[in-house]
Length: 153
Image (cartoon, rainbow, N blue to C red; front, side, top):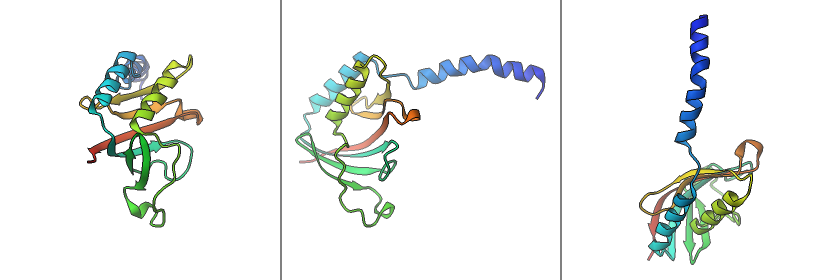
């Protein structure tokens, strides 16, 4: 690589950093409130959602789970792909959040002076579809992905 290419790359780094920051911009307070209002307006008492979380906490982190919620309590969580652990059966995951609890965790982290939250919401339901709460790099946070929300009758 010649000198000119090196200098060009160095000059572009700050621009790339700004662009990356915009792609993963943190939740803003109005977005959080509006998303939570959309979620609450659904009035879901019973639902199923697929959820994956990332942390330094072992199995079943980073695996898709099917989470069943009734009256804002998790009643079951099972691996989406049973071949991940054929003997697992229903999982006992007391730290796994409902969508409402996830909103509360996002707000609590935002309220901390040094808190860190980033992610995005589903525009129709308000459900957080991606959230990082705290910093994963130093084992002080958790990331969540949610998808395929289904109302249960």
